Length: 142
Image 1 (cartoon, one colour):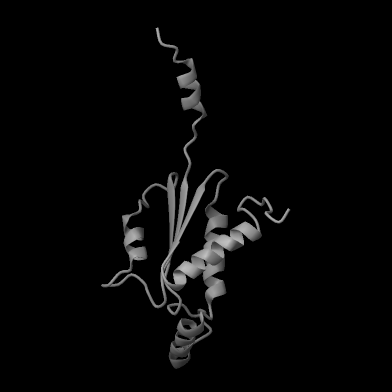
Image 2: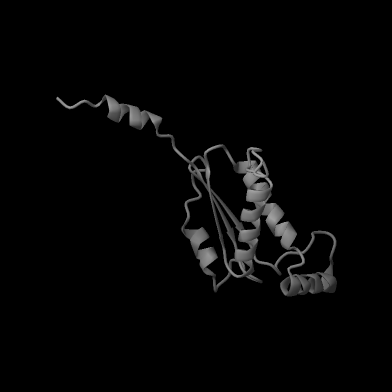
């Protein structure tokens, strides 16, 4: 007779991990008729069950301007400046970090993807997570 007690223990000790997936698009990119691979990835990811996976998508640099601050032609100029020098890059990183802070539970796996400047945003966010803290407050600077 086969001893299944160790099999039962290993099954009981397995916990379901949840995935948090963050996707950052490239300069001027967003959902459109000509989608980037980041958009295609977001479309393929399951978003139906937040107990198993959370998905965050952010449009690219140059698609964002501070709400209520710019109007008309100044908004167009602000978006062009963002395209040229990533004026709102910090906001893209902070928004991704905020999503993690609001969603993260200890044991979750975080995956970060990006295209073009979105890849830089993804790398900046990963660096921030490493340097500042993990989402549950464990400082990495010790």
